[in-house]
Amino acid sequence: MTFRYLPMTEQDKKEMMEAAGISSTEELFKDIPENVRFKGDLQIEPALPEPELVKYMTALSQKNINTKDYTSFLGAGVYDHYTPSIVNHVTLRSEFYTAYTPYQPEISQGELQAIFEFQTMICELTGMDVANSSMYDGGTAFAEAALLSAGQTKRKKIIVSKSVHPESLAVLQTYANGQRLEVVEVGTKDGLTNLEELKSAVDEETACVLVQYPNFFGNVEPLKEIEEIVHSQKAMFVVSSNPLSLGVLTPPGKFGADIVVGDAQVFGIPQGFGGPHCGYFAVTKKLMRKVPGRLVGQTVDENGKRGFVLTLQAREQHIRRDKATSNICSNQALNALAASVAMTALGKQGIKEIAVQNIQKAHYAKNILSEKGFSIPYKAPFFNEFVVKLNGPVKKINKKLLEHGMIGGYDLGRDFPELENHMLIAVTELRTKSEIDKMANVLEGL
Image (tube, rainbow, N blue to C red; front, side, top):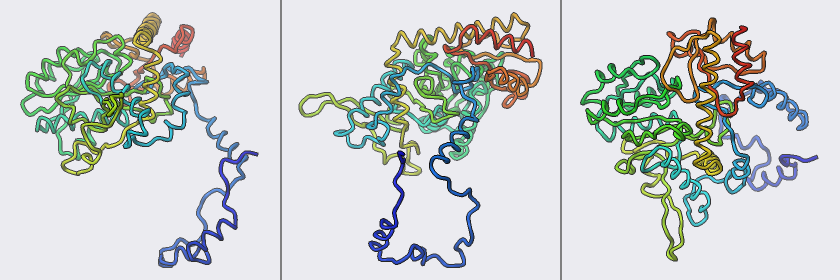
């Protein structure tokens, strides 16, 4: 049979002890006082032979509910999208999936070029001048944007719309607490940021205003009006955006955004039961030296041949404690590569077509649910998610949907008490008309 590892033999053990100058394993622990050593056996399961272990772990994994066996209408930041097959063919090449960080450009040109292409495509989608080589995820990118704004403006007040992802807001609160920044939350009106409340909140102490586009409820925020309010007080305008939606929506950069962040999971990155993801971080040219993480630049070697290098900043600048621009000095290179390959395979027209399908199918789902008597509380334009009011607890209804082979939408009552019995339904390009019709019919029956 094929073994995944080679066990250590007694001869191996003997040779290692001879090299270490010891006669028993116990001698390795002689410097640890007897009174602090663990006595007895650890409370763990006995070891299993490899075939039995594989069978056991496989059985555990099959208890998970996944989108291969179930039709998913769950979004809320993690989406079921089409991934071109070429993505896995590239990312599973050993020179990519074993790479750590491209400090030595002479042997890392493939990795560096892939990251450079990622940066370029993110800039094209967002309408920004510079993008970094990726962040851990959209939530940390969101919080890092607030820190950059506070550092740039020398102000301490961060204003954020309550229509942003609740988890991004939680990450922001954690970051801000450590930096002693004040976070002011602005409420919503009809599923969008309350502009009157925003006007009252923004003042000369405001470092930045953060909004999401489309927002957590799927609605498209009026960035033009928000930008005017933000910049009237010389604060920075930060937009968190689903990059797939930018295949059809006007990029935040066209509305004067100073920083655009988000999550690239929508491009070639599996849902993975919640991670890992790949955040992106894009800025205007004047902020490029303040960008957290890494930047890859294009250059030429002494022979005039095109090449790529890490540029503008050294990793060490991020580990100087109080002088650091950020404490994130790594990136998600492999996931950024997956996103790059997916965007390349789809192309500009493909991304636009998928984005249009998301809009059309989500609107079809909304219309059919509305026809069946369900209340759709928000009337604002939306991308691929919308809110529907149900006649019972979402948790119970989702259990019933599972019995019909479907993963239901997100229970908004978990984060918004005023939206109890409201479900956030995501409809991507992978959902078929028959699947949408089935979901609507099951909900009607329940």
